[in-house]
Image (tube, rainbow, N blue to C red; front, side):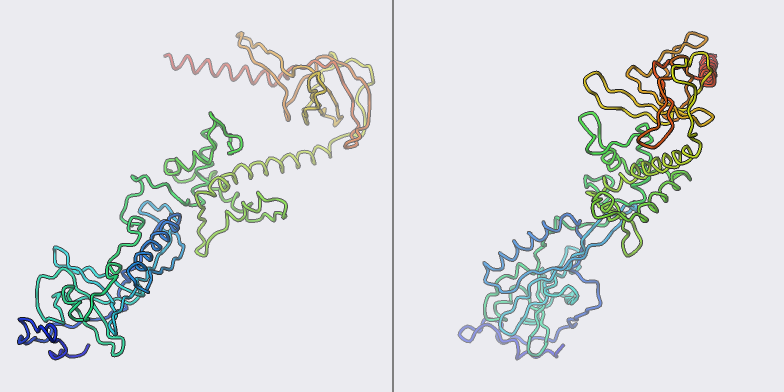
Amino acid sequence: MSSFDASDHPRGQAANAGQFREKANDAPDSELTADVDDEPCNKWMILADRLLDFSKAVERENRRLERAGVDERFTFTHERKVWRDEHGRPWMVEAIELNRPRIAVGDWQFLAQHEKTAAGAIITYQAGSAGERVEGDPSMRCDHCGQFRSRQKVFTLRDRNTGELKQIGSNCLSLFLGTKPEGLCAMAREVGAELRLDEDDDFASGNAKPNAFDGDMLLLATIRQIALDGGEYVSRSKAGMYRTPTAEKVKGQLAVLTSEPPAPAELAEMNAVVDWVGALEPGDEDDYLRNLVAAFTRDDDGELIVYSKHAGLAASAISAYRRHIAREAERQRKEELAKTKLAAFAFNPGESLKDKGLELSVVSMREGHDYGYGAPTHITLLDDDGHVFYWKSTGFLSMPVELADGTGYTFAPSEGCRVRITGGSVKEHRVSDFNGDHETVIWRVKFAPTQQQLDDWESERAAELASLVSSRD
């Protein structure tokens, strides 16, 4: 900074020198400094989904500058990143760097505005690049009049030819510059102040909805929510007035659902899901799997962050993975089953199945087409020797069962279970056009649970009664 020269600070005007024309000014007690290494004062963060609102706020300020006849404009740069609050929850934010307009009058350019607080601290508003910081003189002395007064506002100006810095009080600006500068309000304008993210805010107690989730925690919460709902995953397409999508429950209760660390089984499934998605190679026609892979792409730091709007897609990975596991198990089961099937028929056409002691395993059950008389059920069964049986049922596939104490059960065959054939006959032998199985076609079938199933129900009922008696005691 140049040395102080009183001749550079004339009093008043030529026609009216003013009462201070003979007053001599002393040199300032301290010098202004330009420190570019300090933390930039025009940098802050906003939530990523408020970027458009911030851009509109900048446009409003620029229209004010245009009306004031100022050529300079507010500009800003932004970078999207992940910020975690004090609870460790991720938020997608935009790191904003605001460049304030630099207003110039003649050769003098405004660099900063400094304001004093009630405690005597200095608040500085930078103009231009956020990286160039200019500190004000704490004495708030004016280099034009040389007076120490209780000023609330001073400006730092720089000569664009010599680089000389001057600190001028707000009341002396017009005298120093010879004209009244326009647009100075832009230097201290808090552009988009209502959008700024305060890192000290407690988001847990606020109304702000998370705009991003930790992908691993989202998977854990989904696993637990499905368990709470009895193993059912409700997609958005299947939701209704009385059924809330699982993803919406997870987003609303994420903190509660993830309050406890994952159990070994939960952690194993989470890792399996991530590995399964990572190994997918979906074709161009499979949009869902392609989008799923994209949603599980980790950032440069290796973190799996999921936008709130993509949370439903990411949460559905649990259901998709379980369906994949079920299909694989079914495929392996059918492969193993195919190895045990015999290319031979059982019994003779017309032969009765009554009192044969025949127990069969249900291989598959498929609903047929309804031609107006009710949809039939196509059932494929297998005996212990590997003979394939085919049964086309048009009736109700359930029957009441009464236990020893009179308790009633309803037995309905399902895939994978065992049934005892108590009646019916062999209709014909045929080779399936679908898979080439040698099928023994049966009809007018009567069935019942196996003795093993009855024994299991009796044991379960006895345990229930014993528990009831002990609770009364």
